[in-house]
Image (cartoon, rainbow, N blue to C red; front, side):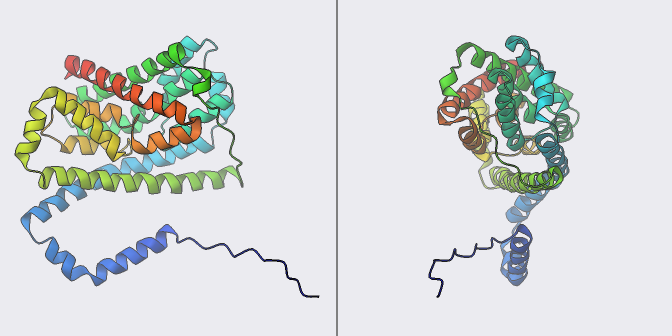
Length: 326
């Protein structure tokens, strides 16, 4: 008797990144004539110079940050974080914020780590402080900021102080005003294979996302410097409040990895250091991809409250710290 039961359709094979890169390189070779003519003008060459300079400077820090953040997310046991924090919530918040200095992690890795902390019983306020601090004040990010702003050590200090203050302030604010029904405790995702496999999978995913957003950020910065009339940028930069809000909003839209955002900020030399500090403080804490990840991990009711509050607190503290140090 023939088996008439429907058979499942074979899974469609998705193209891998190497195949996509090969196709892109082949297309670039075939179109090298039109591409060369398109970039023959002085303005186009200036755009390429700015774009390549930002990518080349930032890429080593992106790679290093990706390797370390993947290790934190996949190799460090969850119980380590729960045991290392004080039992009193008010003390756990600043300790969790300071942990960002020792535990490098990009934005994409900090969200699942914070979710694991909440799932293991750590007070949400401390987990949220770590979520904001880890991608903003870790050693890789601070080193990248020092390289991007040579001879301006106060820019590094300002980023450290303003970002840490924002993360601790948001943790205490959630401890004071947050409600349990606003935050959904994330479920544990099943992990297939060994920790080594999970690590390399995390590295591939984080590297692809970070490199993609770096390219977008570098291209946008190059366009602002080359295509937008300089007088427009100077008009915006001349108004202190407008400049700060504009760069903070730009950080939200660009969603650049924190290991690379300092090089984009350094290229926006028309703006004051305080405005660029707001860009560096807000970017690792509030952007489009982070909002989506926070909504998926902790729920939409959490994200629509936490992200706007973080934006306001981050901008305010960046202006305060910049006014004192810069």
